[in-house]
Picture 1 (cartoon, rainbow over the protein chains, first blue to last red):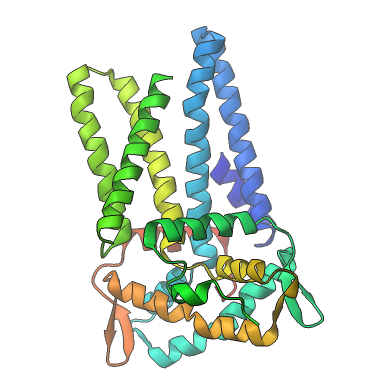
Picture 2 (picture 1 turned 90 degrees about the vertical axis):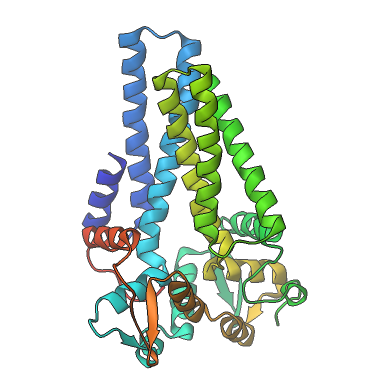
Length: 169
Length: 163
């Protein structure tokens, strides 16, 4: 239900409002899960305690699978790796390094990302400088970078540990 | 409650094992190694489950819960392993606080993070793509995972270029 609703909503909005379709798809699936659980109580005569403990397993499974689905779809939307693979796979003779640089210019790609962040309000521009706008991605970034330090011993695959803590102009 | 507790315990055990292994030595292929860790921990549990004569229904529910949470972690780990351009930028902007980031700073940010080159290198490293005479070709049979994603994209209709 989650997947079906999400695809229908996304296509009907002509490829815009991706997150809205994800959220509505999730809520639709959640509604179906709730109905199924209620049906289970009615038919199997489960006690509220048994029902609660069953929900403790079923709800996280549904949420987890929804998260997996969201990331699976998101890969197709924004993953550079997927796009590169798609481009190379689409050409029988492969793709020259120069053609890749033309198609996926680093600067142009970042401009697309920044534009997307400006449109969503996550980043704002004032007097020629960029600032954090909506703070919804800030805790996500904080958690990811803390995990990088814990698991990988570094903050970035590009910036050395000392430079990573320095501010940029 | 038993299903939830056992599944959670297995996940914690798998994560601790993962942390210990990573501290000893970072694997060459992180995601594959992570999947092996999760699989090994669950295999160990299966031996215990058969010895305890755990019911099939309970076993399936534990497996479903464990596999789902493990998959969630593996997916999240890919964001930990490789830098996300978006989250990296958010990190830099957060560090800069009220000072913000100038256009020159933004240009430096882009120069210091060649995301396309590293993603290309990752495709070569994972054996999906091969470098030949200054170009890149698919290496062997296309990955099932990539085919699934690309096939699923067709359900969405055309997507504009860009990352």
